[in-house]
Amino acid sequence: MVRVVPTKTADPGVPAGYDPSRFPAFAVTVDMVILTMSDSRLNVLLVRRGVAPFKGMWAIPGGFKRPTETLDEAAKRELAQETGVDSTSLLTQFGAYGDPGRDPRMNVVTVAYLAVLRDVGAVVAGTDAAAAALVPVSQALNGKIELAFDHAQIVRDAVERVRYDLELTGIATAFVGPTFTIAELRAVYEAVWGVHLDGANFRRSVVTEDGWVIPTGRRARPGAPGGKPAELYRAGRMWKYSSPIRRSQPNERGKGGS
Amino acid sequence: MVRVVPTKTADPGVPAGYDPSRFPAFAVTVDMVILTMSDSRLNVLLVRRGVAPFKGMWAIPGGFKRPTETLDEAAKRELAQETGVDSTSLLTQFGAYGDPGRDPRMNVVTVAYLAVLRDVGAVVAGTDAAAAALVPVSQALNGKIELAFDHAQIVRDAVERVRYDLELTGIATAFVGPTFTIAELRAVYEAVWGVHLDGANFRRSVVTEDGWVIPTGRRARPGAPGGKPAELYRAGRMWKYSSPIRRSQPNERGKGGS
DNA sequence: CAAGTTATGGTCATGTCAACCAGAACCCGG
DNA sequence: CCGGGTTCTGGTTGACATGACCATAACTTG
Image (cartoon, rainbow over all chains, first blue to last red):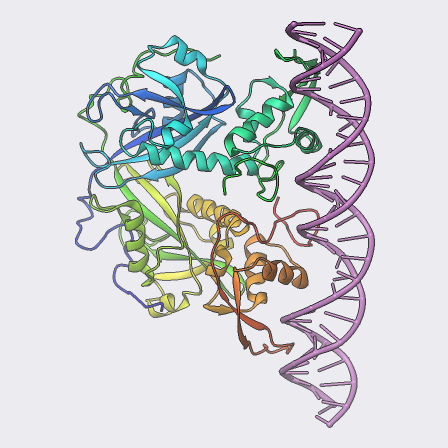
């Protein structure tokens, strides 16, 4: 089954029939999937294209990588350009897309980044409404809103990635504000996973995972329907791979996307 | 904290100061980290570079992406070219690398793929020993073997990725032959994670996860030191995210990488 | 003040998993 | 051929995690 192909193994980077000095030229772009929570739903930041191709259509923000910067730097620059947020920690590269013809103008390979932010409603409100908007990911994924290029697939992959990261890392705190209640944190899981979690059990899991959330002495004011005021926490360390809350299908009523 | 940046949001893909029709040109390559198990160690396939830059140094195989093919197709083509193996299922894209200066010749962005194969010793044996080799990843990562470009980092990231995938997917069966014993499968986990797992408990976890391994009636012949002949299995379906064996630090003596 | 709502704390039953033990089936050396 | 060593296989047990559920606290509105 494993055969030997002796030719070319000694010269990586040069496919047969190609002159090493003449390589196909590509444009490299960095595209950002900026996710946020608004009214208990997962939203993505979209911009309306002002130039051809796909002029007037919605797309995720992005831009050309410059030869003098790294991919991460390009992503950070784009994020700051779009939202004014300057934080590198919550930027995650999650995929590269290079299908031929994905950009009708030229050969473009794009590197996709995922950014998780707390409510960026201020950006949309302050900007020309036609230029940028936060839309629920459900609308962007079911075709309600048609996206330019292959951006629908990119958003789909980003959401899938954040679903995993929610379980494997402490990324959930990036969705909420600098101080938050356990219920707000639970709303993140419920929105992203599309499930319903028991409040009491969720709380126990979160507070026993020590170092993740840190209690501030204060309490939040209850909402309209009243209720006991919730304790306020702030984010502690984000760990890699320690799994605070686990996704499970057997119980926990809800959709539980399998 | 969130400020409005009205300029340019309507025109994604065009950084300030750049003419849209004149974008920086990059070469796009696809590099492969081909991992395999040899004598209970995790190995990576390296090739010796025959041309400048880094001529004579070890590197991971790769090549230019062609404008007419997708990234996945380019990876599949490269894998077949290097090993003769033609299987797309075990190819995973895991990262893109575009630091300025990573290739002294020109601006190159590379998309890295991970391939997990059962022993490809035949490939190396059939090739000129100077042209290709299987080396333990430990040697490639601790600097014992110096790699060209930023390939050391790419290999490091690939190993980290496979450590995760081992827990989250059924990729472990890709390391072993078409039929295998539970002990061989356990050796994969032990080598990749650097831990020691209890044989009895491992077996129970594997066989209860139904559909993953399928018993063939046959048994393997014991090795030199004897022992009860082990039952032979073949790989069943590979699932996504169902976690057969879990990584844990508290017990299971060994290094148990944290 | 009563009813409704949310947050928080606790109990309990179940399931999972690591640790451990025992027997089965092979090897080798004497 | 027999006994010790080794590996594989199956079973038991105890600690712990987790889901389901109940009770109380502390707020809201009417």
